[in-house]
Length: 566
Ligand code: TEU
Ligand code: CA
Image (cartoon, rainbow, N blue to C red; front, top):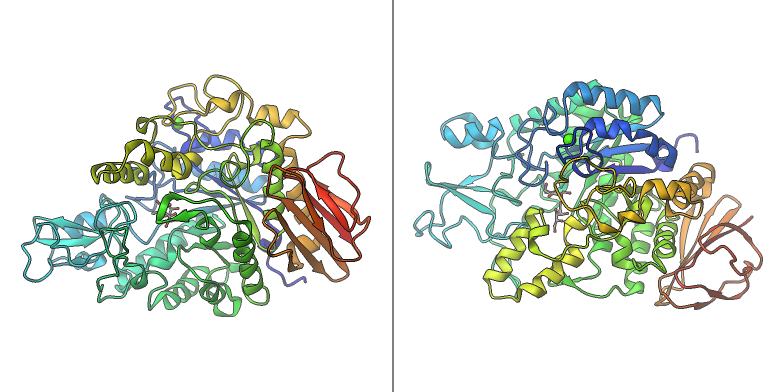
């Protein structure tokens, strides 16, 4: 077990810098703000911080549209601020991982500016340029080179009248896709990555990295019944050269220093079988991937069509990933990030009665799986979905575009708003709640997005002072992963697969076994346990007067508990 990589027992904390802490009153979080709050993170006990992008950007997609890979956006600070932050993170024994957004650049990146303005330049081929569909007048509706839709509504192609051609953008028109077929593109990206690693950063979270290899034929996709556009994903999700590119990146960038690094590929649409290939250490690609299966289980036709979660689906999905990556590869574990609504509002109960209980139940179930857990800022406080009532409250490009397109297409604005209230990415992007003061201690100015009114009760200051808070429970869960080898390394065995109320499994490492139970409902739930668990020690639980463990057990509403036997 001495050969296990350090990140197999680590916990990562994601910071969305824009919404974390504002040091200069301009309403936007920044690097000095993070520096001021590092003790909160060290106190929580996390091992790694991941920063969402802080590079210069027009912020069409809040920094996921980068116009200079080797600098810091003035809204966030300077390279000097970055170096200070990195040093302070290292002083506290933590590591710092950067976001790497190289499926696309900003349209304001000099690479793209040159590609667009000089069609004869070698840079033209750094992006995906194509003529209009044959027989169609360039720039007219339906003349796009293929029928793909963009993730942020509308077609995936933008017309450039100067050259009469279109460029591909799987996301916003301000996020043109880089052409990874071109070896110069790849070398430029690798050089930039080495530059950050040489500066001391400890790895990368790679944005939509499984989309970088496209089928160069760019064929039309199938058009689902509910959509105007074709689905291009079969031609760019885990495309033909994806493994080759990631292996090349590993050789060119990580080789020789991989032991100190953490690399995680964000991979929408990735399957367990693909993930196993990506994370097999023998193949030298990435350490782990973010998969999306479990966060799609409550969606119907598109992400804003909300369906109730069926617990057996969640168990079956996460269980399949646990089994699939048991021998080879490694899981990442997450409920929240900057693209997902808050998990308590989604799978738990964000009302006053059960907020803490359901938050800690969800945390227990996730953190007791095998894999590297990721905590998203505010999750450790039990932050809830935004309380937005009007479309004017929203800032996110995906949400605003979806609203505009749906309403223009004749959908009822109130209903579209309901979908956003449940699923919008802005639910995760309201300012971090530090204290009960008017702007939650986030800023002395006007915050770029509304502070949640519940910050008067839900905030870091109050949570630290309350020994029964969600924060202290997360602290204990993180510590447990560090001290109990079975939490990090044990095998996973699902129990009660068809029970619609209780999530149950065991973990085993050498002679130690854990039993994990979580009631996913606001009602008491009875369970029948397998033999031999009677009176086993309680390791952690979220109900103070928990009943002793018996073969027939009634769990309190949203109760979670972990028992150990040896
Ligand atoms: O997200 C990729 C992704 O496919 C989705 O999470 C997507 O953003 C959206 O939620 C679909 O409904 C990554 C980043 O995490 C996201 O913030 C960026 O907007 C996106 O890539 C483009 O860079
Ligand atoms: Ca600021």
